Amino acid sequence: MYQDVILDHYKHPHGRGLRDGDAEVHHVNPTCGDEITLRVKYDGQTISDVSYEGQGCSISQASASVLNELLVGKDLAEAQKIQETFLELMQSRGRIEPDDAMEEVLEDAVAFAGVSKYPARVKCALLSWMAWKDATAQAFAEEAKTV
Amino acid sequence: MTQLPGLLDTEAIRKDFPILDRVLHDGKKLVYLDNAATSQTPRQVIDALSEYYEQHNANVHRGVHVLAEEATALYEGARDKVAAFINAPSRDEVIFTKNASESLNLVANMLGWADEPYRVDHETEIVITEMEHHSNIVPWQLLSQRTGAKLRWFGLTDDGRLDLSNIDEIITEKTKIVSFVLVSNILGTLNPVEAIVRRAQEVGALVLIDASQAAPHMVLDVQALQADFVAFTGHKMCGPTGIGVLWGRQELLEDLPPFLGGGEMIETVSMHSSTYAPAPHKFEAGTPPIAQAVGLGAAVDYLNSIGMENIERHEHAITEYAVKRLLEVPDLRIIGPTTAEDRGAAISFTLGDIHPHDVGQVLDEQGIAVRVGHHCARPVCLRYGIPATTRASFYLYSTPGEIDALIDGLEHVRNFFG
Image 1 (cartoon, rainbow over the protein chains, first blue to last red):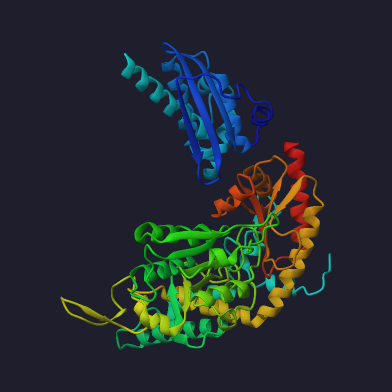
Image 2: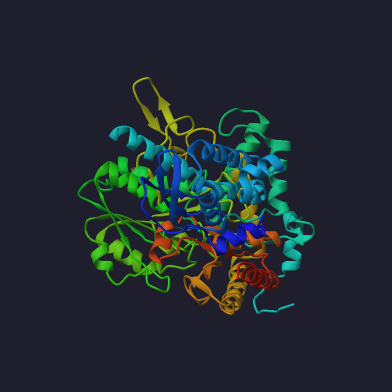
């Protein structure tokens, strides 16, 4: 479960800290107290930043770091595909062995495949991804209001 | 092997618990240190459950056939055993519920619907403490929201004890009920009952004691406690899940209204109104957890065969050893009393910046079962400025060797995340 990639991201997180954003959300995992505050910044359809601050286990913190590394610079449609693929992997209960195609989409995030075998920890891994999805929906809802 | 004074013959006791022989993750012996969440079940209780279903299963208190009479005798026999176990003056003061949460909710609801002098309303106050399990917080928040009664609580000292310095300001003439935990499930603290009960009696408030973490581990004498109600659960004391107990003083149980209505709790029913059966049946609507009560009766027999004083002494020795060894681990901070005095056998701690979920997961890989999180006592975590803790909790079958395994495991955790 604790792949080196995960421990690396945990010890040296990417893009941690809150910066300017279009929307901010705060998500918690009530079963273990993991928390994340996450902001998204869009430049048109392109993700220009995902910034976050949080506390929690290595899985939840490493997952946020991977998310930042993977999604910043991508356009929304591509990011949504990555998010959906990650969700599918995490909900697989260990039944999906990531193939080359999946690895191409998920890059470092395939390291979390082992976490999907531990139902109690899946929520930890998904915390930042659900927060990102929520923040993105809010950012575009805000934009729709102002247009 | 480490020898400590007061230890039970765990080698013999462990033979009664089949699950303790389990081997996990390719050859790791199970080290079960999550007894504050639930205890393991001895063969004697498993057999009682099987025998009940194989030989006696029927609904209770109705039917005139042999099985119904046997089931009723077993169910009511379990009540006798529990009554004796807690030194209740009368067997009719023992109400079976499904768990301690239901017992606590039952009292909150009795008081919410009660007439004077018990009635909780907007002019009255409810007193709890900051170290309560959520099951002794939320029912009172609900009652407070519904009645307008003010909810007040005792704070905690830095070393994990109740701060009773303002007891006369917290418990006042307005207080209707004081509800507190005898032994904290997260801090392990054993609370000073006498001081609280004395003050509550001075102002005429009722006292409810949550003994969930006490009943399995020490002699529980409801008369000595001088409380009005005592709640606990079966599955933490070698019994099955699905069975809890509320003990209440007889005159209160006579006066207070029922909460759940249904079969079994009535005397007569017409389409317009009903009259109620006397306690305890007044508070046991519907088919009760029969097999579970029988299992709890067997658990009480089992604990009595070992002796509660002996269990208490064993756990004190184990806890003293565990506190000493844990304090040797670098960066480890015990959340709660750092001695074995006036404390139960649950020890919460943090380990540097390593999140408890990671601690628990790496311990699990070594076969060591602990609990991680806020232990349904989030206000305690907030009070001590921590998101969660790792908790190791012991019971009559815990050994010094298991404490050593925990300490080695924590060393491994530190190296892994260090």
